[in-house]
Image 1 (tube, each protein chain N blue to C red):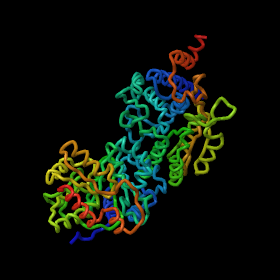
Image 2: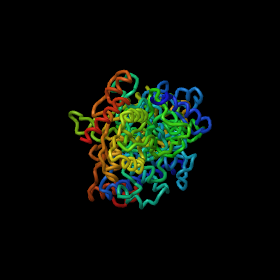
Image 3: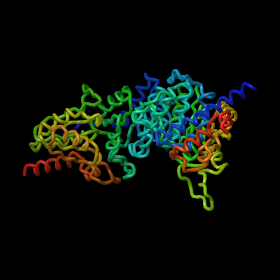
Image 4: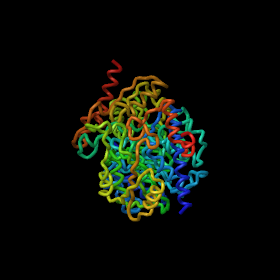
Length: 290
Length: 316
């Protein structure tokens, strides 16, 4: 199992690099989102570097697994992963949110190859993913469709409209990942606490998906090996759609961003950027600096 | 006097989709639990595997249609105009219009005549809304002859479409030799006194109004605009030249629909007096069709009176 462990540590290194690219891109663009992209990073890395069957050199390969980032405001995380996976030059991340860039604030499938749906208005990407999975069944095609939603996104009624249809058509070729970072943009007031109240308590979201007839599993969304195992297990579910509830930390990897709703879409100062990049450096480098 | 009776456009929609699906395995129908009303029930009977029931959940229905289209399938969405446009607008805007996906949205029970439902099911600005979405083609056929061809053209042409489909049986305007073309308006009558511009089934009532006007010595040009977007600006300019006085008539709000489109085009190209007849800035109500058409001034008789009155005021 040494090889698997080595692979996991490589993926963890990729995820650290992704986080650095995210923070640099947002600082450079002076806009965008940070908290959500950082909570989703390990899962996106696991998907694009291990789980998904794809060909970066042929992004329209018909038999590829599909991925829809329904929480489209985390686009910079997806862009960083796609760039590192070879879809486009990493240097292009500096064009994020710039005029005429292919890297739009929210993913635009007409602008950038490798995007399976345009998303950004919450809940809609999930619905389109249900359509892709349904179409795959109709056309007897064997790929799996993965879609990531946020826990805040589960506020949207369309998510539950789609959850009903996916169950009704037994879409076992559909895997939903809920990036449950326990925050949304503003959340609810939590009396007596400096923090904000999570959109869904621990078991609440699990119970809701289960009530819709889905196969539900939980995973620590920052444990690379566990994420891969959970995603592969969800893909293997037969007869009904599967949801993986990934327990994550908003702003993961940067101490002063973690769990703070203000970092949903704040831009770091130069000093904050320096601190963040130091925290996200490779362990060897961190040791050397210490 | 008057046009011969014909089929309801919803029946034509269902028949045509069944015929097309026999030859084209890409065609699927996505229904919002209204197939027994929208005309596509026969599609489920003939092609059950390609009839996808999305239940009473229109936002998701349009989203699913977008997803289906990315695999090369051609989804035709069956719902009422009030729901497919009114309820699911954001799904259309973000998932279908912006990416330009190949989804065919139908707006059943369009306009005033919705079968005694009252205002909740009557939407008068679906054309106004859909024509402001870039990349979307907006169709409103007049009769069974045109609707049959329009459905075929819509399915055969890549890109997002919206098509109004009416509930009630309506007269036949066109002969078998008529050829519908996306983006082309057609003059169905010539006359020097006034130019009447209309769309959808309302054109049949406008045509009959023109015949009534002719009995009183007023000869109207009638321009039928089955494609509201892209608009046939040249045909509208030419028709406006014919009389110098344009009256737009539609079974829609006078705000933003065909009247708005014609006013925009003519103010750019050929400024001329334009009057807009249709549903005023108000909501609808229940009632028998004939009485609704009279009350909202869309029947041939009411239109003939109102156009005559506009003409006399213009001369005085």
